[in-house]
Amino acid sequence: MKKHNFGAGPSILPQEVFEQSAQACLEIDNSGLSILEISHRSKTFDAILEETFSLIKELLKVPDDYSVLLLQGGANMQFNMIPYNILNDNETADFVETDIWSTKAEEETRLYGKTNIIASSKAQDFTFIPKDFTVDKEAAYLHLTSNNTIYGTEFLEDKQYDIPVVCDMSSDIFSRPVDISKYHLIYAGAQKNLGCAGITLVIIKNEWLGRATRPKSKMWDYSVYAKNNSLYNTPPVFTIYTCLLTLRWLKKLGGLAEMEKRNIAKAALLYKEIDRNSLFKGHAVTEDRSRMNIVFTAKDEKTTADFLEFVKPYNIDGIKGYRTVGGFRASCYNALPIESVQVLVDAMQAFEKR
Ligand SMILES: *Cc1c(COP(=O)(O)O)cnc(C)c1O
Image (cartoon, rainbow, N blue to C red):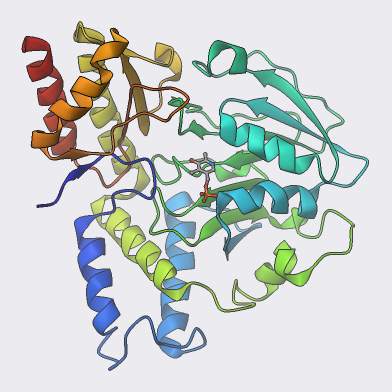
């Protein structure tokens, strides 16, 4: 039986994406071939790639002066590829540290230039998003992590800063409409809201292609991917197909405004129960709570293991918190239906009554 999958990533995708991609493994588009065996230079894949790019641009309303790239290596590779492509040796990148992902991005950036953590919530266990920070006007860019997958905080506004902004949107991309024009570069691993693992989406303002002057390896150079329509070498064809199916599903449901409405409703349902229930408490401060990763703990730590055991008959999977936070994390990505959230709420209420 299909479980209620609250896993943080790789994570739940729409059921029809599972079904259609399974079918495509047997045969894609009456071609007599499996998606797993077709050439990445075939007409079939050309059409898949073209529709994928065009749906990304349509759903995110990507302005014309941006390039959409599909790369490999995950968001972690972007921690390195971004400064390699953008930051010159003598330049500085500013960071707002809101999770271990931003820390990792900062560490990789130091390999290529200077870094400055201009604000951090680390000393307060990443319970909030710092807001009163001033960017260094001389810095090449400001790096943000829009959704903090482990600690459950989220930037919900696309703000204008005095310098270009780079944003890791791995765990909230496509969960709400985004004003791309406020960013010079956004990036996101596919495996949370976009498709299965194996692809990283990068959207970069064209004027930034070729920005850093160091000699570059071709496989590591955004310009090479931009020139070759992300087909410089063999891309993960199957992963891209799962992204396309997910994008079609998103469009069919009404796009990102509709998705945001659903995500707000799911998050409200669960946070309401966390605040009401005498046994649990939320990790993040109320105004910075993430809609995607809802992190909460048991007021009495000893009951954490009991609750994890208690939810098993409810067919709930993936709510164990990250090891540094403990407690629970219910990831409510796009494809998680509100019915699954209701099942978790029911389990929390039954646990309290017990
Ligand atoms: C999951 C995640 C990552 C890591 O992504 P990989 O694709 O595994 O490298 C980075 N940043 C954020 C915000 C994430 O949620």
